[in-house]
Image 1 (cartoon, rainbow, N blue to C red):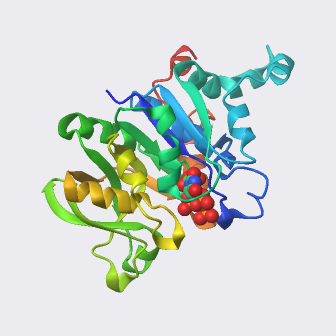
Image 2 (cartoon, protein in one colour):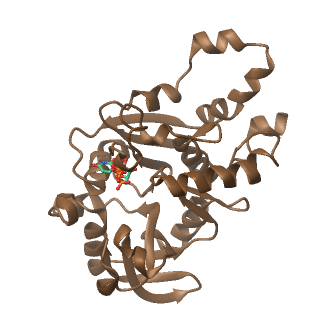
Length: 291
Ligand code: UTP
């Protein structure tokens, strides 16, 4: 039902300087796979097949990654190194990739609005690739897509965070209507602990209904002078319905050095070492079955 996944990937990644001075944050490898490829695997697992990527200046490496590299592939053809390309060839076979550029970095809300041309008038998913989510049983986006089938409204993934970390996230409050599902009644971007309505923090997974575009268009810049998706979602919650879903699985904030190191250790121990030296999230990969 949901076919398209938007990847806002135009941000500067300043927390990871100098690594991100000329390299997109989304191309940082966790073990031997770039962050954005994990995101694409998660989207494919959820049944999506159209990847819409919002890029910016200096982000060519993302486009190149989801394309053939004839010279390299010819060079390693027939050697055991070809095995290392199995996952990326697999995702390229299972999805299409389209790109649009955000000319000015005016915030996540603005990046999502920039993707409108690629999404059109249908509900869609959003993955922030620097949040790496792992659940071997069912990916986080697949869990959310199943919920969308039932509720047909925008959904944000949330997790509990320590009170002194609320200033790093959009925080929601709302009534729990079912196990781990809340109907959102308030949402604040990066509140200080004293102002925070709860400790439920929005992480980088969303399902949005297309009316969000009109709402973002009419959303003024908020915290940090950026157009915040949180502000637009609050408007949507007040006039319609937005759900928050406390997902099952691990989430690593790979936009921070600590989260990135944790993700690397976790993926190395739990995926790479146990899984025939691959960090694939996509256990049902056609290539993997053939091996
Ligand atoms: P972040 O808040 O993590 O910002 O953006 P950032 O620039 O990537 O990283 P830091 O904080 O400077 O280290 C959340 C997501 O929104 C995208 C980013 O690429 C990231 O995936 N984004 C943000 C855009 O695409 N455009 C923007 O204008 C802002």
